[in-house]
Image 1 (cartoon, one colour):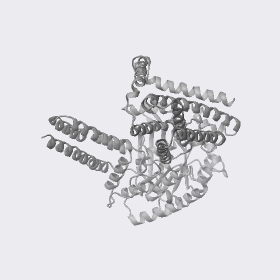
Image 2: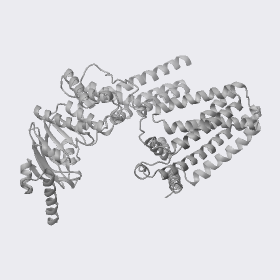
Image 3: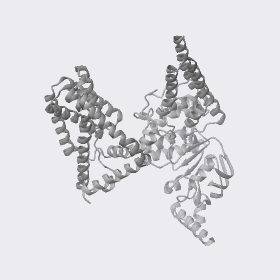
Image 4: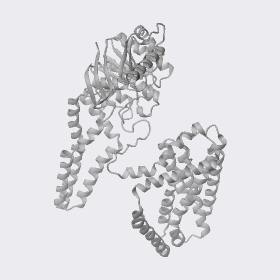
Length: 238
Length: 378
């Protein structure tokens, strides 16, 4: 197990929880898709995992992780290379190996020419690529990715999928929040479906299909059925 | 909607917005007790200047300096486009309206440039007329030349996106025009100014008004122009955190991301990060140098015993006051650390080293100057 999350309640202010009763586990080499409608609580779940929520009742077991935020964050006044230097100083890896991996990733993501530039000056897609590089260079036990495909061109999209596959083979767990359901359907081993702050489904595509009574349905269709049903149930309760 | 109506709408909206912003800090008491007396004072001084201008020295060196000073004001030249970001959705497919709006914006800017440059010229006029003894015709030539440089700067600002390119061009233009002004006869300067102005105006009308090539740069410039008073007010407000100025995509200091320390450790990594972050943050670096500069200035002026009091207060301020601690906390207050987290114990250890790194040179410089001035005084 590389991540265990048991959230009783989490929110931005006391007495106003955004998440309730969310519990899941991620095992080594497992890619789990965190899906749900806008405002369902996906980002709050990720923030809770990172310990960035002010009000959290529950238990998070998470060590040596990497994080790709939805909106890239860089340290102002540092070049991309200097971000790599800083990352290197914080992790226990062989410098030579790290530099080789870095060169390889720079080439793969086509950022070689701008490595001595401030990432603030990059386009949105380039910033996302830089964030992905920082995450993969960390060789973490688990990668937490919040909308990692956002702003990527199809070529880089493909490269990211290959890298995700490599990381899985290395034994790293991956929790990926995404709205790109057709891709998630193809690559994820398991799905966590969150709606209105609750975990309404946790399982493989087959489990999700059974739960939504759509034996051959796509993840997109199942998603629609389950989230609509959850909202209807909630309205009936009210 | 016609171009004129759209321009009028944007012009009036901009005017109302700027009035509202200035209204925050300037009320009627400021007008009555500060601005009105100031205007009267300026008018009285100007009348005096006309009367006494003949007595002011006008040797060739001073003439050259005054002409260079006059031409320096041409950096104020600018053309507003009144473009907004949403225009790419609503105006790009309506070329007639787009051109028409830009035509009125250009005409308005041109008129504003004529009026403002004329008032600037008016300030220097008494000295040129009575001190140097230029005739009205010669003054007209000089104004034409001055106005042409004003237009050149305004045009350069409209089309040169990179700040370094703009400043380099502006300085080259300025030096060339000053050299022309010093060496060429006024009649030639007048003709040169007319030719430059005419060419620029034709270029604006035929090329720059219809083009969309500079659209995003123009939107940026418009945003800056719109927020100019707000920025000015925030710029002097002591409690507002200022944004650093960054020239270009690469740092000027350690351009190739060279490491400061050979040893790789979490402590050295974080220390390098905060040192580089500090040295490349113009506001933080400026504040640090300002504190040292102000202390040195006070030490220079005050009597001997006060010099040492100031020196010890400076040491206490840096060491026990929260300024250096606050600076370090600000440098670490970044979302980036959710991506690459740092441990609390490393944060504290590096904090002490960082504070020492800024404290020791500051105290050494101020202490050295204080000791030197003490020896000189004794």
